[in-house]
Image 1 (cartoon, rainbow, N blue to C red):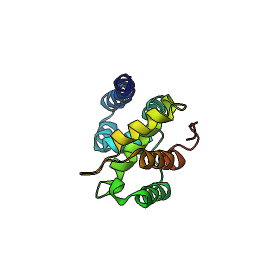
Image 2: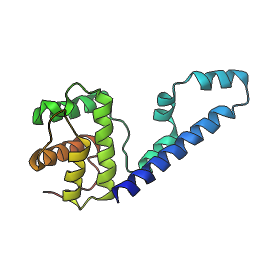
Image 3: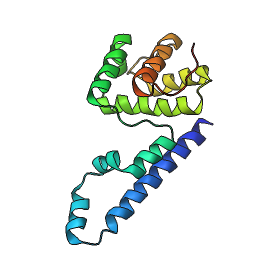
Length: 153
């Protein structure tokens, strides 16, 4: 079931990326083509309405602003510094956004969501117990997708 959801999300993201690629390639003027090719794909994806729509359909919220990201990372470090460790902040945020997609899919199945947290959030030589995973889930929900419904523990 999780694999099917991941594949559906990946398909939505790939469709949005194809839309971006077609739009960039079908540009009619030389100036426009040069401008489109010099725009980094990540920057284009973050501002492209088609990509935002595809991600939203997959239940993945937009990337948080700097203040929200800082608060999210600080809250995770407060639970256990190993959650963030020396990982790139975007990687930790990405895992949280993916978890939001799972919250959107299974808002009433907290046990499943806690299990997914234990799979997504890892640290070298360490696994997170159920209580820690529940706290991580709540931090993800609070900071990255607070408007999503989520069953309480």
